[in-house]
Length: 328
Image 1 (tube, one colour):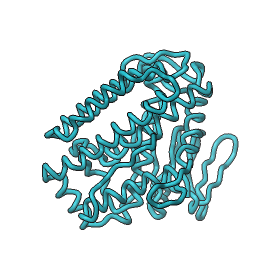
Image 2 (cartoon, one colour):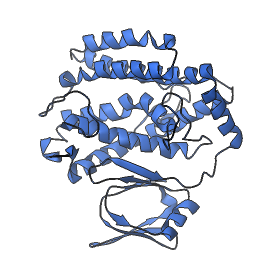
Image 3 (cartoon, one colour):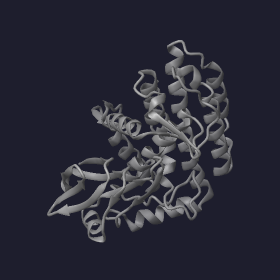
């Protein structure tokens, strides 16, 4: 099973056990048993019966608007969720110390991976010593933080120091100013926002395959927001999956200024740019490495699932959670 990305506008429907996208150029058929998620970047029409079809097969539908912003997910009723584990999630959220233990772990994982990326480029002669030193200084304060808000501030400051190294890392024909989200004010910010959205939905898709409830996170505040656990886990993987992909696409000349559009709403990838990014993103998730514990090759998509299993074990009291760290 794998995600299916939709870039052509048309009508989504079903024909027996097959998903059908009908466009002006014809029909595209995809056997439902081959689909884990649908990513919709185009204008499509669908009806309630199609959503019932997705629910029956446990398929998530992620929707992005015309600028490539993540708009939301049709999240079918949970088929694996465990009431006992949900109670454990809630207990860990309501207990200040237990919540902080998980929140600190996510920030430790994030900053360790930021440092791993910078050390890689330092070995290649890129001047990143200043940002690296600042991140190491900030990392020393993680275990001293007394609230998730304080940890978010540490992570945000570390990211700011990390982004200061990007102009030296990226051989780009476009600038990178301060981090801006909605709207992105330059091409690099557009890439970060788009890549992060893909990561959030990839983690959400993997959460659906576990007993975890995506609504209960620990670093990000669980309030009226629909999902927060995927945001927590994404912090660990942003440097590993999103940032390194951006560096590759830009430094190899695959993404250029012509792949962006600028308007009153900000700067965004055009259709060709989004297709290219998504194609390389999927390759990244399928990329394998030798897992140091399992002693076998696993993909990065599987690694996200393994990360969630580690969180489950932590919540059940089997083993303290230790975040994934990129080998530098």
